[in-house]
Amino acid sequence: MPRVKRSIMHLKKRRALKKAAKGYRHGRKNQIRSARVAVLKAGNYAYRDRKAKKRTFRGLWSIKLNAALHEEGLSYSKFIHLLKAKNISLDRKVLSQLAEFHPDLFKKIIAKVK
Image 1 (cartoon, rainbow, N blue to C red):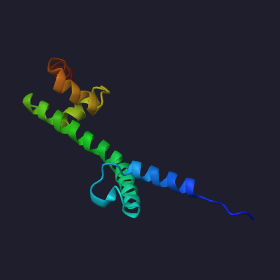
Image 2: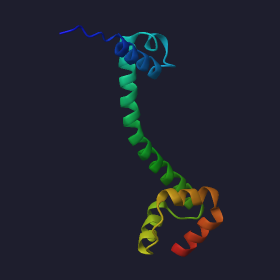
Image 3: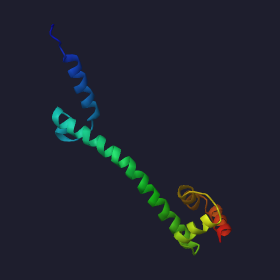
Image 4: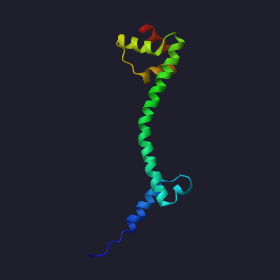
């Protein structure tokens, strides 16, 4: 069998790895062994934190809602219960945006729920 030379693919892999590790600090951007570990870990963290971001934002929406509701003399849990009782199906994201950017409309929703 003839000899297979792999230099082109070898360099292509290294080039892609260096491009992915661009901007990293110290040897993690230059040294291939360190860069490979850094890129793999970065990918794992990115995957994990895409899920965590959703949890974080849901918590943030409830905090914003609770703050806006306390100004109106209502608690978050009671408000959510009243929404379900009145069959109003607005999610927490929309409600928090209404409370933050359109307080007059949010007050109308509160009045309808009470």
